[in-house]
Length: 220
Image (tube, rainbow, N blue to C red; front, side):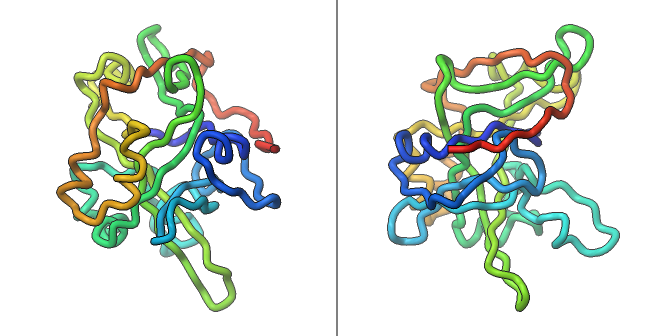
């Protein structure tokens, strides 16, 4: 599963995705659980960005004593899991734009931190779900999860994770499917869009030992 990714910068949202971004928005370059990052949604007036928290249920929203991770949602069970089924049934689909995501590779004998992205660099988007939160003393806030799919037979993603573990990947959507995903209101059609496309040339770069890195503001 993916628990850390490199978010896009403001200029990527503007130039690559054609979006208008509020000038006061800011978010970290590397995103971990409960950190803010931009997502793209369509609530009826076309694609728009939202700042949302990474993980469908933020830690502060969990009941006392409950410890679960909701940064990823398995495509095979998303419609039945309590954390995700309402967003799935309401077709609250989003794009999570990024420059790469990180996974461990054990081919050297120990965990090596690998950044997965598109060949040649650049931004791309993965399929996600989002929801809103509100409380009397809180403004409306948003959170999101990233959908994952089995990758046992994928030439690159099958190399990630511990030997013997199931291989999984985020669903990197082809550009031509971005709008179809955001506007989809049919579960069957939505599932047909969730696959690892051969059209997307993926690449990986080693970042050495797999450890949490220092976070810096993404700036402009």
